[in-house]
Length: 412
Image (tube, rainbow, N blue to C red; front, side, top):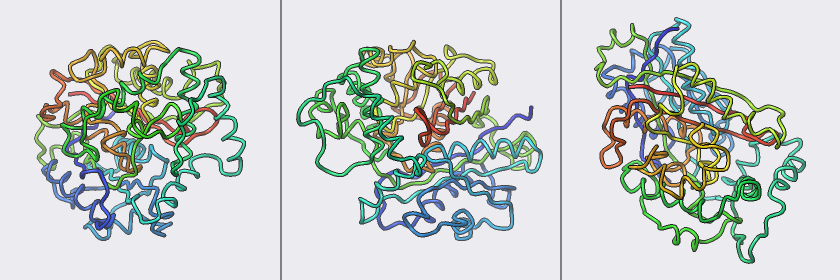
């Protein structure tokens, strides 16, 4: 199988960029990635653009990639638009890898960009209503919410302000986990406190403020057991990766010492499993496939970035990735095992909860963090001696799990 490398990668600061158009965010990410790879835009043979908000929020329902790229210096080459919910950026990355392995190009670009902050915040939140089968939305909602039945909800733990319906789904996942494994709200707060603490050291993070566990428990509620700091914000931003084969690296004259190998790239879709089949969860199966591709196991990972649109997401995914047995994600987080300096640092970037979650750029932002870690360039958040890293990025809902999941393993 053709070996593929990350030659250059970059991201903008994620946050509220009300005055910056989406193409300017994309331009910044592209120019920095090209500089990082020591190449020119004209060296790129194929480009994959990931974004899912331009149609709904800006009216650009068709050819968003061609429109954005036309403004930032990319034309004539094949351009593909990728929309796979919150896993869009990672899916673009996966498709770029397959294109290179197919021999059609030796240098490829994966770029994701979103501008989610608009004056009408209710409209922005309603975007998430399309993240499942809209023809069966009420049925799906009732099925998922029932997962959380049987857990007493304290009075005053529901926000009276608008928020994404997906947070109610995450809360149902939380309550199901609490009911079956004894996970506590304090353990969720420990995850959130850890990630916000990491974000203080990340100059690209949207929220750079530390919170204690008690701060997070006392924060405004969203829906039990989630409080505001446990949930990702609406974010604007962009991220880009330049991928190369061996021939591509030679052609552009990349610095081989800073090139990171893509050891595994897996995208999987949902299955019709039942709640009584956690061993068949989509992320678990994708991770097993990725470990097999890379010839590595969970014990070999030095650092991980996982999809924590809420703190519960991290607990679920550290279990699915095989770092701890089912039900042990919360206690392990509370013991500090996933904190910088702990057994296996998870989300040293601050995660989606604090770094931000500009949907189409999110997965590429995770890969930026892991590449930076493997290069030894992460500064105060550096995981010492990092050699292998794993990313998990999910999107949408189908049945009782994510509609799509991408897993990547990177090696120094």
